[in-house]
Amino acid sequence: MRRLDILRSWVREATSKVYDRTLAALPLDSLRELVDDLKHRRVRIPEAALTRAIAHAAMVEEAQVHARDGALYVDARFRGDRPPFEAIVRPVAGAFAPRGAKELVFHLDPPEAAAHPMAAEVLSCLAGVIAHHLWAPAGLRAEADPGGAFVERDHGAAFRVDLRTVPSVRALLEGPAGAVITEALVPRELVASEGALKIELAMPALFGP
Image 1: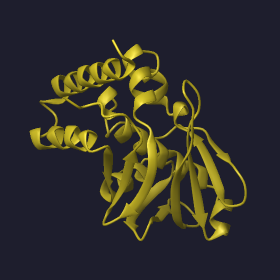
Image 2: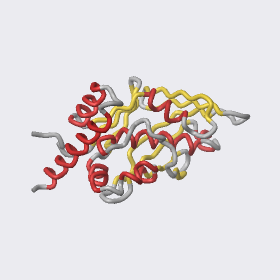
Image 3: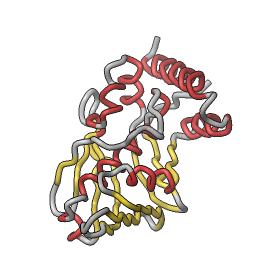
Image 4: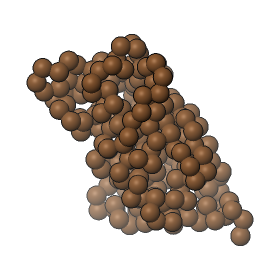
């Protein structure tokens, strides 16, 4: 069996498992939308989901994310006397190596936002929710706690996150189906517009005839 046929088989099987596990929790339209997105090699994360993810960050009292003009406009307010985190965040796909790194890079504007003490925590939550939507066919739930990824200051106002460090992804990679699907579903481009972060996938036609 060709490698492409194997990947198609894995994705179909994993998607079927997601359907079985979540039928009682998710509207049927949501499941159909997930499969349709994969057929068209895309993933769409609404800004409401991005906002909820940041609301999980430690000490966050209120958060808001708007996706427009190629960027995420993030506003997070914290309990106590911590200053607000206000930044324009542009996520891009970093290194996605076979059986290796699965990285996103977040560029912040203004550059001073990179020095905010909660910047890494906020970006960790964004990375987590992106991973949950990207690899939902492998069984990741979009509403799972998105935090916990390791965030590394790259250079200037850029931060690098390896999605393998998201706790739910680490657990996923322990199984063969999860490992195969994370290799197959690779982000090619991330575009923030019209109220959503849209991920174009670089992958074979996994749902072909």
